[in-house]
Length: 208
Image (cartoon, rainbow, N blue to C red; front, side, top):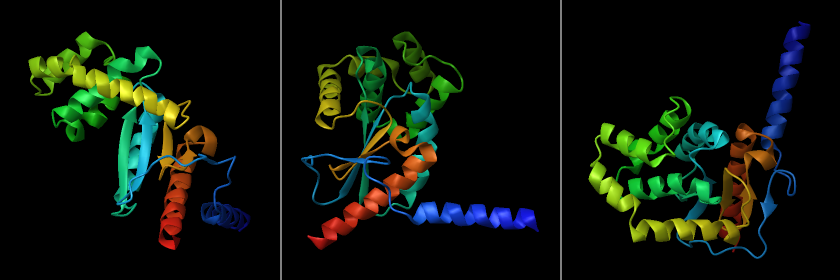
C-alpha cells in the first residue's frame, strides 16, 4: 500500500511539473530585442551538430514532438559550424539538403557516426559512406566543395551570433525564446519547455 501511495505521489508531482509553466532564467531565456521571424508560420530553429552526443539523443525526441506540434510549426535546422572543426558536418548537412537526400539520411548520419563509430566528420569517410548509401559520390563531392555550400556554412556560422547561441542543441522559438537541454536540465525537460514555449508564442500571436 505504501509503495502504491509513493508511486501516486511521484505521478502527481510529475503531472504538476508538466503543467507548470517554464521559468525564465532557469528553463529558457528571452532574446531582446526579438529576432526576425516568419509571419506565416511559427518557426522553431534547432542549432545542432552531428558530432554532439546530446544532439544525437535529442533527435528522436524532437521528431516525436514535431509530429504533434501543430501544422503551424515549422522546424528549421541550422548546423553549428563554429569551431571550424565542425564545418565538415555542416557541409554534409547542406549537401544532403541540396541533393534532396536530407529526409532519408539525416538520422543515418547521426546513427552511423555515433552508434557505428564511422567517423563521418572525416571527408574520406563521408565520401565512402555516401556512395554506400546510393548517392552519386562525384556529385556529392562537387556540392560539398561548392561555393554555394561554403556560403551556407558561413551564414550558419553568423546565425550563432545573431541568436546568441553558445552550445548545442539549442532551440529558438519564434525569434524570441531560447531553450536547451543545458538550460532545462535534460533532453526530456527541454522538449517539454520547447512545447510550452511554442504554445506561449502561439497565444501571443493570437492576442496581437
